[in-house]
Amino acid sequence: MFSRWDLDPTNPKAGDRANYQSIRWTPLTSLLLKTLYRTSPISMQCNKSDGSRFPVNCRFVNVI
Image 1 (cartoon, rainbow, N blue to C red):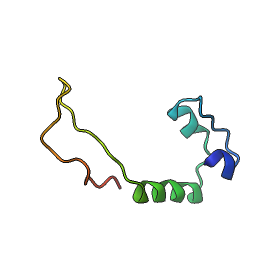
Image 2: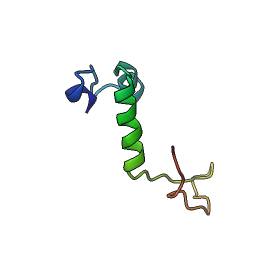
Image 3: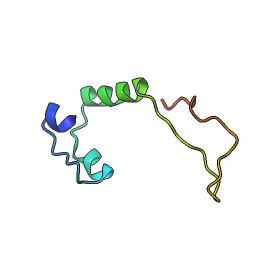
Image 4: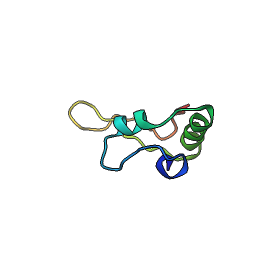
């Protein structure tokens, strides 16, 4: 999204950290990311060290 909208040099083959660091973070791009996190469903799984799940529902955790 940022590569097309703001011409930032992100690359689908680069890692998440490299792409994050390549974005010019302005108040507007920060607001876009915050809005994305607030409006997009996030699913996570809470696992123990042995790989089994904790008996907890993590779907309703407020990220921001």
